[in-house]
Amino acid sequence: MFEQNSPDPDLDVCAGRYVRARATAADAERGRLREEFVYVALPFAGRLASRYYGRGEPPEDLDQVARLGLLKTIDRYEEHRGSFTAFAVVTIRGELRRHFRDHTWGVHVPRRMQDLGLDLNRATGTLSSRYARTPTDAELADFLGVGDADVRAARASLAAYLPLSLNRQVTEEEDTELGDLLGAPDPSLAAVDDRAAMRRLLERMPQRDRRMLALRFWGNFTQAEIAEQFGVSQMQISRLLARSLSWLRITLLSDVVPPWPGTTGEPEVRVELRAGPNRTRRAYVYGEVDRDSAAQLRARLLAALCAAQPRRLVVDLHRVPWMDAAGLASLVAVHTAAQGRDVELTITGVAPHLARLISTTGLGFLLQP
Image 1 (tube, rainbow, N blue to C red):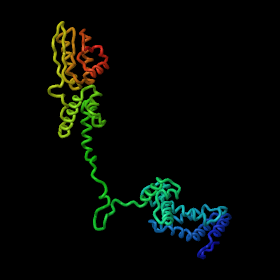
Image 2 (cartoon, rainbow, N blue to C red):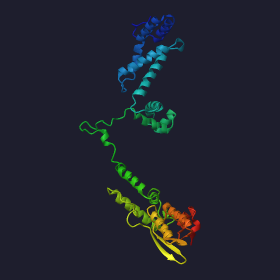
Image 3 (cartoon, rainbow, N blue to C red):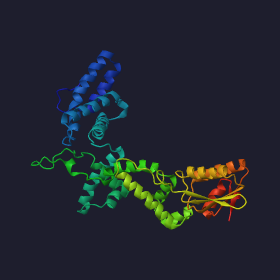
Image 4 (spheres, rainbow, N blue to C red):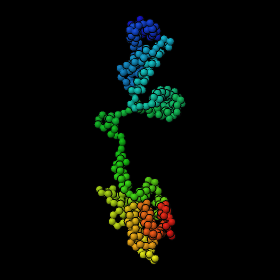
C-alpha cells in the first residue's frame, strides 16, 4: 500500500491512504497498516531530530523522542485536519522541546523563563546583526514585548541550564576543586556555642536585670532612657548593668555557674529596727528588695510584729532604690499579718516610682510622706 522503496515518499498521500484503509480494516489488519506507515515515516522523524543534535543530548535519545512524537501523530491524525506533515512537525518538535525542558536543565526553571531565555538568544542575534553591537536590555525588552526585569531574569535562568559542578577541578595540574574556592569563615558560626550559653545564663538572671540588658543591647536604649522607664537614676542603671555584665563575663569563663550576687553570703537588703514612743516600731530598710532578698525582709518585719507586739509599725523605704514583685508580695504578707494582730502599718520614705508599684498592690493607703 505504501511506497516503502521510495527515497522520499509523500507522507500526506501515505497518511490519506492509511486513514482510509484503517477505517474499513479489521483489528489485526489495522496493526499491520500502522507498522507499515510508521516504517515509511521514520526517516522524516529522524530528520527532525537531527536538527537538535549537538545541544548536549545524545542523538540516540533525541531519535527516540522524535519517534515517540511520530507515533502520537499517527494515532491522533485524522484526514480532515489537513496536512499530515504539518501536524507531524508540530507534534514532534513539541516532544523534542519538552524533552529539553524537562530533562536537560541542571536546575529547575519555570517554563516561561525557559522559553523566554530561548527567545532572548534569538533576539540577541537578530538585534546584534541589526545594530552591529550588543543590544541593551531595554532594546531586547522592547523587541520581545516584555519588561526589563523579565529580560534580566531570563538571562539569569540561562545560567541554570548547565551549572558547574562543585567537584570540578579548577585546573588540570592541581587537585583543587571549585567548591574549595567558595565560601569563607563565618564568624556567626563560631559564636553559636557562646550564644547558646548566653541564653541559658540570661534565664538565670532576675527579670529586671534581664530586661535592662535587653533594652540596652537589643533595643539600643541609652542608660538615661532606661532609668526613665524604671523610675531610677542613671547612676543606678549604670551600676546594675555593670553588675550584670561582670557576672556574665565571669560565668562564661567558669566551669561552674556562680550564684547571682546577693543569693549567698551577706544579703543586699538590711533591716534596722528601732523603738519609738507609744509602742511604735520603726523598720529602716536598706538596699534593693528582689526575689533573692524579699524573704529576709518579710521574715524581719514579721519578727518585729510578733516579738515586740507594737501598736504601730512604720516601714521606712527611704534607702530602697528598687523593689520587684517579690518585695511587693512581702509587703502584702506583712500587711495581712499586721491586720491579724491589730497593728497599724505605715509605709514611708517611698520614692515616686516605688509608690506607683506599691499602689498597684492595693496598699497605696498605707503610704505616708
